[in-house]
Length: 388
Ligand code: NI
Image (cartoon, rainbow, N blue to C red; front, side, top):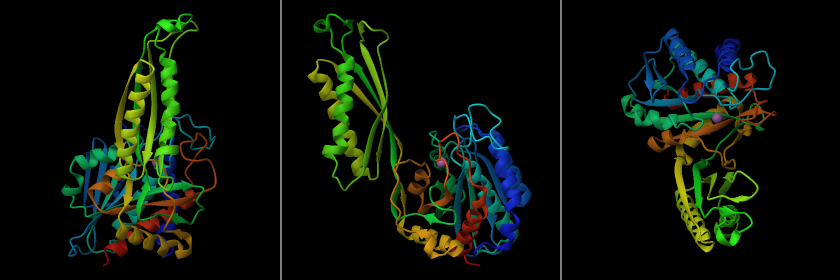
């Protein structure tokens, strides 16, 4: 490549789509406006097939190449949902919906994949078919899982899948990925502690749930520091502690909530088992009881080795080999593209967003400068995986 003229020419148009989506953020599966725009544009571009309502509100568009003799089908995925935050950027295209904003750049991901779809439907310089996948509910709802469970892979004969996410801190014009685990399994935990409520001045007649819950928090921190191999990775974070309501009553119950992040199935099982032992054992020592509810949420986002090479090569064709980190450090954030990677081989890649606020921050805004780079990556990936 690097950036083909036709893609450069689409920059302003795609930026306008991105900003329009940014102004009207939608949460979880409730992405009706955004999905409507996506379906309408795919129709306008002349996609061969457009299916809405996959995984509740997901959209898939099929674009056939000039030839389809190869019989190959690859899937390119973008996410459409926003976050429950109030935007503080002050930009002219800031969110018009109080309490909702595109703070993770999914507006940019959707716009870039739409732009790539427009280019691919115009040029069709490939042999096979492309499925452009627009999913709802990446931020906690498991929209990727819903689309896979809805039979998306078989229905469209998708053989490989690729995903992309912007990365603040990674310079504009750079990409990063790695073979194997790239993002963590993200599990939710809830710990329900039961003691014996009583008068604060007569603690000997009560079983203090606040003390038990506090000891559970401290002991849980021994898992990563004392049980996990120092050369392996895991996170245990307790993020909510709710108990009591006044200054002279020992509460009967306490509730903790948090998250566990791991990079392998073995580590996931191990941390869960240690947590059960600590929660139940600690409560028993103090004469109370506690129950751990462990919700397995998103699995590890694990790139398949060959596909990570194909993705890296496509990115290198756009920005040059020197601008690709093919062995980036995994991150402990979760990503529900993991469900698609469990269903089919593929790879997830980070695209440099440059300096500025991190994702999920109220001052974050997607960097429109990277739109042609992301679109070119998609185009190059298709043209190299499905050579005409
Ligand atoms: Ni995101």
